[in-house]
Length: 253
Image 1 (cartoon, helix red, strand yellow):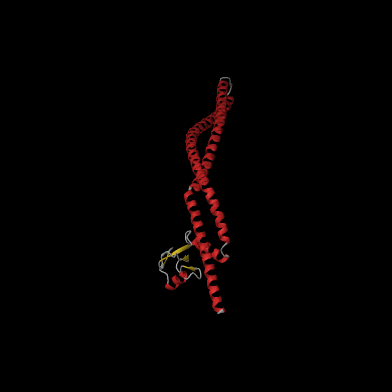
Image 2 (cartoon, one colour):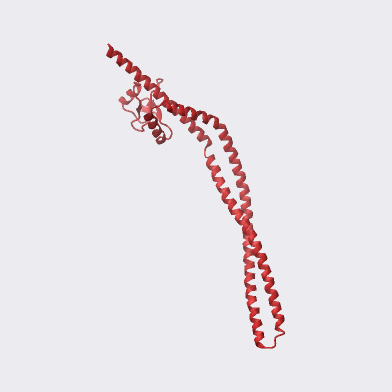
């Protein structure tokens, strides 16, 4: 009689322990599914905002470098103009001196100096043209960057507003779910929780499923009759022999 009572007590204890564990798993799965839905609602907004910010930073850097180079070009142009004016003035003075020379040696020396300054003048004029071309191209590029930057900044601002609204709408609910999840995980054994986390990660966020007749509600695989029977006896937690998900039986079936 005592042995019989012990068996009954053990059976009742096992069922209660199973029911508590499987209900905790089901509850944890529901919470994780809700958290996943919130993340899905946010979608790729955080990534979009980050990408746009990176593009804005890169474009801003190029834009600022372009403006700085335009200032440098302006200084170089001024310096080149001053040098050209100086070369022309020296050439004119040397040409005037040609009328005052008294011998060929003096004449040749003056012509050598004139040729030297002419070379400097030609080089300076080439530099002047190169600077002008660079300035025109860069000015057009900077103008285009400024327009792109303005458009990008507006887009970034719009995406940030959307993200802030989405975060604000989900923040309270997410905090509540995360708190409930933490409490729920404490009710599970370390071993079962570790198994749950592995399956959740491996099976696209779905670790706990109900029986679909004699099939797994997750992967749809037909289950051995003995496994189905064990799930329905409510004695021990069972897993699908194919996908590994935790199985439970809904009596409404």
